[in-house]
Amino acid sequence: IFGSPCTDLSLAKKHRRSLLGESSKLFYRSADIVKQVQPTYFLMENVASMSAESRDKISGILGVQPIEINSCHFTGQHRKRLYWCNWSINYDKLHSRRLVRFMDCLLPCHSPEMQDLKLSEKAICYMNRAVSGGRSHWDFGHHSDTQNDYSSCIVSNFKKGVPYNVIIDRRDRGLPLRRHFHPVECERLQGFPSGYTLGIARTHRFECIGNSFTVPVIQALLRQAPDLFKL
Image (tube, rainbow, N blue to C red; front, side):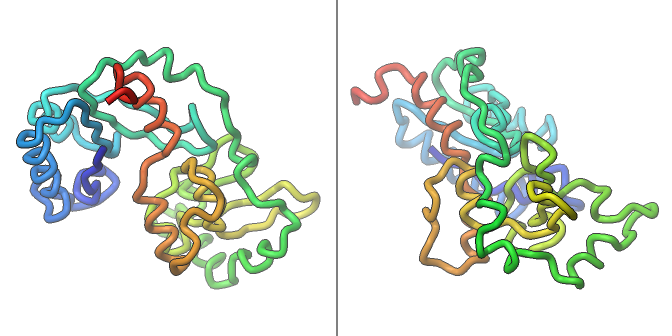
């Protein structure tokens, strides 16, 4: 099970170099390992927002076509990813899962951490600032809102704070609380146990969680691998 860095593959990045980028070139090292080891099963994940050219090149090297899965079928976040695996996947069966809402993964709205997570005045000014065509950072929709069933995608840039690591929390009566995520909330949205990344710096927790897999998706894919757990 592996993933290659998406830094130069995502269409969201300007001046991306696709598979020629320094980080993305690690894909070729992974592909060489698959070729040399010839494992019974392999599974690779990467962003769905890559060019068709990059997707087809990866598929040609691995010898399999990807399946696109949105994590919202398994947990409380929108996270579209491509998965390449060398066994047959029943797509309909993958989606017969219990849906988990965004709010199911959040800390209680009156927990002590809430005030510490509140956006600073500087952060709110940043979100309100017009940056492109008169649009503010709110208008780009990188943040999450509890009025929706699912959060935005958990990404490693949460370590930087705004504009990604932002929730409009409307669960309490009165004015909504504009705040940051707590690492535990991100762990839950990715399908990890609460406190899984405890013990390292908070910024590193966000980075590790955002760069990881959505655990329930990987579990669902592996369950369809023939005799995997008999090996």
